[in-house]
Structures are given as structure tokens and as C-alpha cells.
Length: 344
Ligand SMILES: C=CC1=C(C)c2cc3[nH]c(cc4nc(cc5[nH]c(cc1n2)c(C)c5CCC(=O)O)C(CCC(=O)O)=C4C)c(C)c3C=C
Ligand SMILES: [Fe+2]
Ligand SMILES: [Fe+2]
Image 1 (cartoon, rainbow, N blue to C red):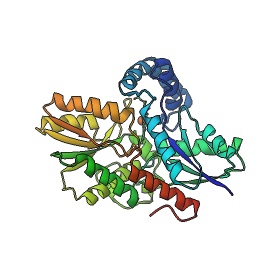
Image 2 (cartoon, helix red, strand yellow; image 1 turned 90 degrees about the horizontal axis):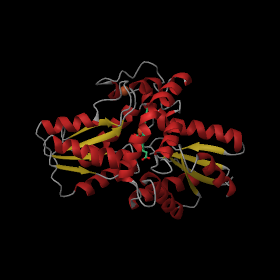
Image 3 (cartoon, rainbow, N blue to C red; image 1 turned 45 degrees about the vertical axis):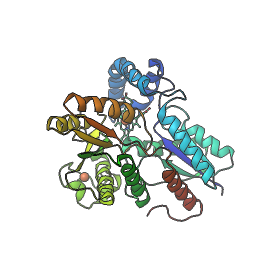
Image 4 (cartoon, rainbow, N blue to C red; image 1 turned 90 degrees about the vertical axis):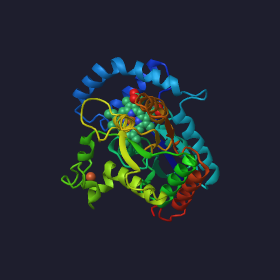
């Protein structure tokens, strides 16, 4: 059998034109693993309400961060793919869950190179129904329909992998070197609390309280909240951060349902109001910088902090195509290609 890898990230609109943003948001928000309500309710909510106003607002946000080469998320993912491709012995293709290049075109590209054993590699450190799961489900549907001879292996979430923790911690240390920050905020993309309960395989463990994520359970294999806390704990341990000098928050909530808390925007505001002057922030749910890091955190977050008296707001960039990250990913790929287990 001939092996190859499909890296999969979230995706972006084709351009910052509100029409393209609307098309992208339609595909994204009509995904039953993102807005997980019955089809009729999702259609009413997304096509009847959200898509009337959101595309214009999102397009304006995209305009603030768009690069000449295109969407930062796509350009950075392409750079990562090209570097890994140069460093490994098997073909590496890139796909996006929404928009282009599609998962189907990525599988086709590998198929055209004679690949029949694919490592599906969602570019998300932590598992979530709205990210990892939706990629794997769609890839399997496409495999059955178009590439029945292909075999898939899945890269597990790497939120606690020692190589990932080391690279993330080193990146934080490097970017904050010489900066005199009072607190390091780990801001993860949020999800509705309901998603956590749905992914609970025990059906009873996840209470979303102060202790469930620290109490050992089979649920944690699919618990986004637990995995965010674990990434944070391991990085803090690596960097020897003092208790209370760091904390976790969740950003980018949409709609009126309760999402994971505390919310990042309110946390930044609270810190400023309490008199904090120097805040650093890192966003480990994203491996590539994107709208949510470049606009929501680096622009809006900073504005909130300054409005309430904060002075220095330092954002640690995502791992993007850092050399040590490329090296780790390339080694994981080669280990898989040569049949060694990829998990530590
Ligand atoms: C119900 C809505 C959403 C859930 C659940 C959700 C989970 C989720 N998303 C990411 C990563 C990214 N999301 C990005 C943008 C984005 N996310 C939502 C909604 C949900 N996300 C929307 C509507 C948008 C589009 C922009 C906007 O209108 O606000 C991005 C950035 C894309 C880019 O082009 O730069 C990323 C990345 C994760 C990791 C996650 C669950 C853990
Ligand atoms: Fe999102
Ligand atoms: Fe939990």
C-alpha cells in the first residue's frame, strides 16, 4: 500500500466580499455538528436569521486581517503543508472542512499520486464535535462514495503530547522573553456547553463544574474542556508558571445558549478593571493564526483591555510554520509512515 497524509484545517471564505463570506458561513453553520439542532430549526436560525446580518459584519472583520496572498489561515496552512512535504517521505495534501481546497479535492490529489492509505490529520490539538469529529465524518462519507479502495488512519488529538507541549511552551517563552506581563491568559475557542454533554461517552460524567475535568474518566477522550485544561496544565508545568499567574478562558461565542465559561472578552475586561496593566494571551486551540486570533484577540481584545485601563497587551502568535513545529509534525508523519505509534 502507498501512504499519504491529509492535513485538514477549518477553512475561510474565498474573499472578503460579503457574498463569499455568506456562502462560507452557510456551509459552516449548516453543519449539524456546529449548530446541532434539527435541520428545520438550523435552517430557520441560520438561513432565516444569522445569514441576514452576520456576513456583512464578518466580512468587515475579515477585511481587517486579510493578506495580499489571501486568508491568513489558508496561507499559513499552505506554508505548513509545503514545509512538511519537503521534510517527509510521503505526499502531504491540504484540505479545509469548509470552502476550498475541499476534503474531496485533497483525497483526489492523494489518489492521483497513487496513495491508498491516508493519515487523516485534523489540525486541532483538542477534540471537538464541531472540529475533529465533523472532519472525520465527512472524510468517511467521501471515502465510501468516491474512494472505496482507500484506507484511513486518524491522527488522535495531540493536546497532551509531549512534543506539542514542548513546542507550544517554547514558543510562549520565546515570544514573552523580556516582557514583564502580570498574567498569561490561555484563550481557547468556545463551544456550547451542550456540545460537551453530547460528546460525553459515559453520558453522566461531564457536569461542566469545578471538578469533573480533573476527575479521571473515559469521557475525557472526547471532552474539549478537559483537553483545554490539560494543555494549559502541561504548558504551565513546563514553564514553571506560578499558581494564579495564568488562567483559562473561552472566546468567540455565538448565539444565546450557554457556552464554556469564563468568556475571554469579559475576563480581559475584568482584569483591566481590577487594575492589571500588563496582560499576555495565547490561543492554543488554533495552530494557525486566523480571524479569531488576529482580529478578535489581537485587535478587539487589546481594545477592551485599553478601554478599562490596561497598558500592555501581548499576543503570542500561533505555531503556524515554526521550524520546531514543522520538525515535530514531520517526525510524527514519518513515524506513522514507518508504522511506529504516533502517540507518546
Ligand atoms: C456555533 C458556532 C461555532 C462553533 C461551535 C465553533 C467552534 C469552533 N471553531 C473553531 C475554530 C475557528 N472558528 C473560526 C471562525 C468562526 N467560528 C464560528 C462559529 C463557531 N465555531 C463562526 C461563525 C466563524 C466565522 C467568523 C465569524 O463570523 O465570526 C475560525 C477562523 C476562520 C478563518 O477564516 O480565519 C477558526 C479557526 C474551533 C477550534 C472550534 C471548537 C473547538
Ligand atoms: Fe469557530
Ligand atoms: Fe469535565
